[in-house]
Length: 211
Image (cartoon, rainbow, N blue to C red; front, side, top):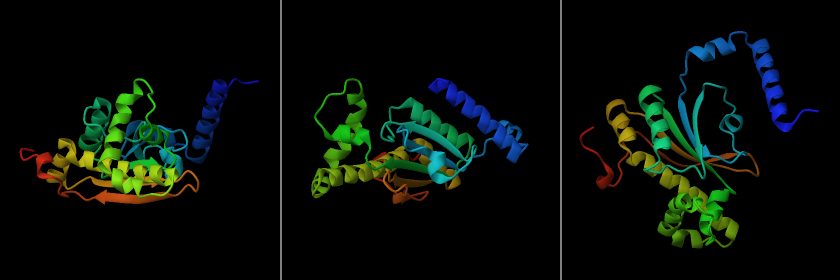
């Protein structure tokens, strides 16, 4: 009887064997080049795997995941991924994908203390504060949470546009295109909620001239 972690290793072997059967050069090709067109910034939630829900293969999406799919200007991890994706991989599209039923968003809507994660959730609380009237127009708690999920994705797209990394690529190479999506756990469908084309204008105080 295999332990749960041993089952993962066995499934990995089965998957690798199956890939080689279907395409003998699969791993040789992947090991020599990485040219994804997309950067995916998603939630860490195990129910929202980028490749599964988009039907993509290894090598097609460069992925960064964190709690509630945030783009925080002090997060060196996220910024390192973003810089590498934009400046080295030359990705054409950045997708921020949230999901309905997000535990991080629900936690941010409460007054409960969660320890160290409070510092992360405060970024979502800020989104709630900025859009409180719109959120409170929803009649149910689920509706309010869903609205905050969508608004949070919109704010993270804007946060991407505020970075010098994205602005430099917009100015010099007219890429990447920014997309805000929300995934439905109940039906498996992705809903586009916003997008920003290269060169989109934002509040001038966030724009850099010397790029």
